Amino acid sequence: MSDWSEIRRQLEALFGRAYEGILASVETINFDSNNPQHVLGLSLYCSLVELCPSLLLIVQKGQFIAVPHLVRAMLEADVDLINSLQDEDYHNHLGANYIQRMIGIVQRAHNIEDVPFLSAVGGIDELRKFLGQKRKELADLKGKGFPPLNVGERFDKANRSSEYVSVYSFLSGFSHNDISALEDRHMRAEGDSYKIVLFEELGEANEVHLLDLAVAVLIGSSGRIHEFFSTGKFAEINQYMEELNKLREAWPAEGK
Image 1 (cartoon, rainbow, N blue to C red):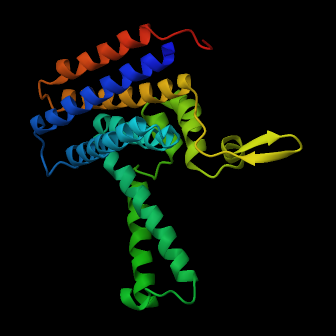
Image 2: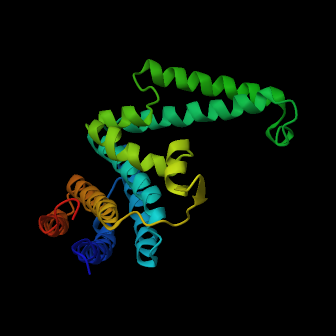
Image 3: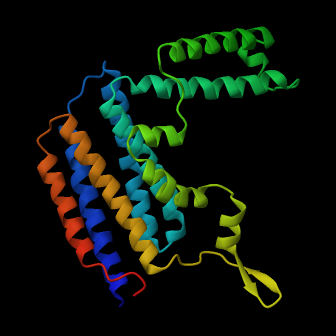
């Protein structure tokens, strides 16, 4: 067994223990259901935690090629979580994002002559009325200083710009049909032609880095949420991060 294989095994074990402990600690969180900041923060955190058992199962099954998709979703949720806990009005930005997306969808439906659901929503006049209302809502939010934020702007706001241009960009190559990413994953030169590749291993070192990121995001976001809500669980959760840091010290040199 290589050093990387052993590190990966230990990371899997830590991930499983951290997830179980963190899941059990969720019930200690007391929040105000009438506070938009509380509701958004917890919703983001719960969405992140929900991805973990699926990720663990995929790792245990050896289908690591699907891991980047889930880790990317965890990373993006964590960035929004950071913003929501730091800015009590952050929900307004995400609300603007939602309204802008709805306007785009409804506008496209409005521009298509034969839309099956048009009669269900009350016809073209109702559709135009809805568009007018949503455009006013979006203008009001922008006027109050809450414009929609793209992914890069959300990373910037969370002081995570370096992650956006590095690890998030790398993970996005797995999620989008980028031509270079597709060719890199599924095409291999064979003489004068190419062969199709499916489920090619990412390499032990890459798998460790991805799993490490997932564990770090789970523990880091859990520490933030428990510190924010003063549950008394922060120190307990921070112990998982100490274990992770200790495990990182045993990593072999890159290229080994």
